[in-house]
Length: 257
Image (cartoon, rainbow, N blue to C red; front, side, top):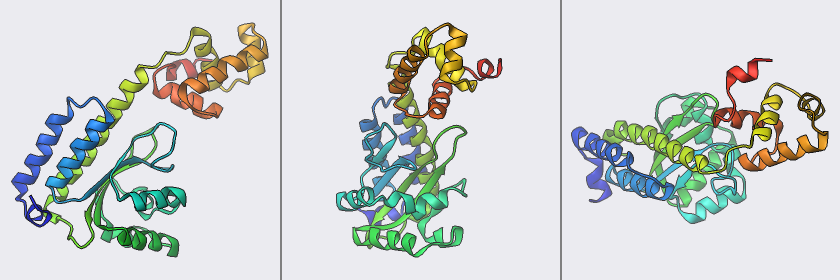
């Protein structure tokens, strides 16, 4: 089906595409399969590109994150190499929005800087047309979004935006499920690592943890370094937050001191 034909989908057919995506999404077990499923559904709604990403880092960063996108390689390489995610007007607009918005609405949502305006203009030169973005905000998690864009020259399929909203929201939830399953496959913290992480979350220093547990400060540091490696974080605050998020420690335990 051509993009122009897709743009005139009936509301009923567009919602059927979304329903089929949701039904298939329940059995998706890998990020690659989700990417393919999302791309197919986006294409059926009249979009040429999709981008389901967490914010704040390059989409191709080596650290684990949710990043499923099929923008032109030339644009994505430049976007990451020049750190344009720091000035991305789409990510900026997401900060104050709870429902999907067309990219044409961005100037009314945020006051664009010249650099942000250039990001939009340059994306068009790489073949990206109009777009629609679904912002995603969950307590304790990095902000994210799911964007759908037409190829240059194609108009935004306005009648299909409600279905795109559903694709973005459910697609992100499927991505979270896959991520949780992947994290669960890793080895859990050892009992000693867990004790040290819990005390970190309670604000204790390595020296204080050593006194409480009857260990040397060097041993405590080794346990915490191993826990940081387990979660792929570098800071104490990040370690505490991700341990809470993954259920390795509980809020009640943290407050019980």
